[in-house]
Image (cartoon, rainbow, N blue to C red; front, top):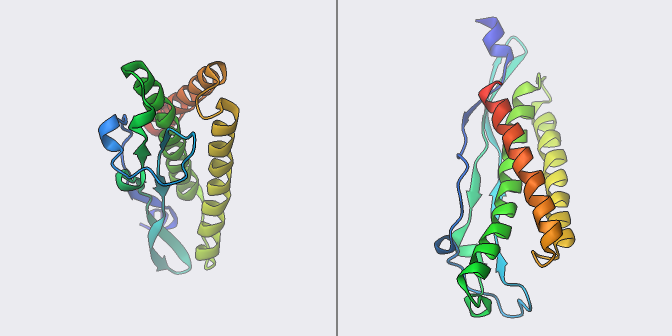
Length: 174
């Protein structure tokens, strides 16, 4: 019983999904310029704490939320079905980055052994991983030129697919 109290456990996580054009219900903002689409995702952290003789057990809830009302596609700029597929493909990359962040948070938060300073410890892990994926998201758009550089888009797609496969392997315990 004491061993269980020392661990951390995640109780729920959204599973990975493919985005579709219908997912993007937000209004195109004025001044969006040449941007064709925007994907809004967020990952947050909540937890419950149990303390038994200074052994802290944190039970995490790490939801990944795709926000359809804040995600948009400027359909006036989409000239054909192939272009829509490219746009969705690029936007899926942003979703994959958020999903990878969620999975890394789950792994790292669960692996940590917490002390009485658990709030600062959990927040430090969250902030470090959040910073990493914010930079990755910015790099993704900059390097792909918002999907216009097809060679870089393909390289990022390969990288993100490898990361997804690796993340899934870790989840499945392989």
